[in-house]
Length: 113
Length: 112
Image (tube, rainbow over all chains, first blue to last red):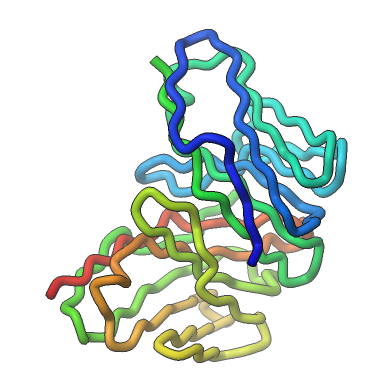
């Protein structure tokens, strides 16, 4: 079974803090993704990566950066957390293929106070 | 990008069939997907359909695809209380090769 593990289920941070969300997959997938999920807005793509050290902006990259130093790990960084970044963050991974199936982690619910 | 459209809520009685509808945007999408999200969890792939198919059946699940109208539906037969969840429709985005475009999700409530 594919396993996508997000390091924290719940996080509480203060405004202005630098926040790291970590995601690890164990299936040697080329592609990894970060989404945020908000009520009434569905899933919105923040960043994705198709290879080590490669990254592409999604629909809402402002206020975020990412790092992919190893194939299995994809980190989302909030440089200076703000209250409007309170959300559920979902990581996904997938193989580079025509089917493009994405496998999701359990999510990290981040509260910025 | 443009929105994948889904109705927000659906309520059915246990044992009835549920039909969740979706209108997608990209006529060049090669695959379309249904994901399920249970409370407090991530998304789980339920099924997917290749764009040259009209229908796909997998146990209690039936997916219908109308390419002309860009309409996708998911039918769950004999719906159970354990099927209560949010269901997301998603399309592969044309030439991107990577990203999926998700709908906002349909909350299915199954009552006894």
